[in-house]
Length: 256
Image (cartoon, rainbow, N blue to C red; front, side, top):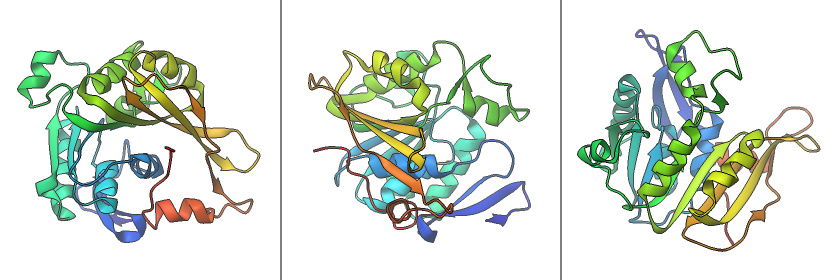
């Protein structure tokens, strides 16, 4: 991490394959975005939408693994949009990384005006805010609070947006907290099927700290609970499998 004079830091991901400028205070991108990107089963020439993209880490990690993609990063915070666009240029992918300032809960007409057309993406991915308003004390930093806490019912807005933007038979991939799994599965019902649940465990024998969900729009196939991934050894070091994703840039297989 390198500190910038403007209250921002320059941080490396994927073992230095990409570098991003992000706020020193407030919401900061971390490993969740890397694991999210690693789980997207995209192929060359496909179109990917990243909702709530922040400074663009997930999309940039995905492009580092599969360069021949077109990524659209949707973010409501104008300052983060500016950083995301700059990060795309910094990493040499500005031509394949489009940034759109938009709220996922905006009316369809407003989204179309931004160039976000329904059912036009082969893959949609998201790292939504984890907490419902009132369940945790809001962070003093407005940007961090906005990224971590959503209003009551807002998660449904996120799922509706993702379902609207996904092409028929398109893939959804998102990362969230395990205690939101019941609600998420209800929201995905009748929108996405063939859902895979991939837990991330901090250490072997401990409860999962995150779950990655992946489904296919319009599928009627059933739910799959996968073995998941253990992130740390007993001494705190990353496991070899986690290192392969976080620093090696390898993908995670959630499909068959």
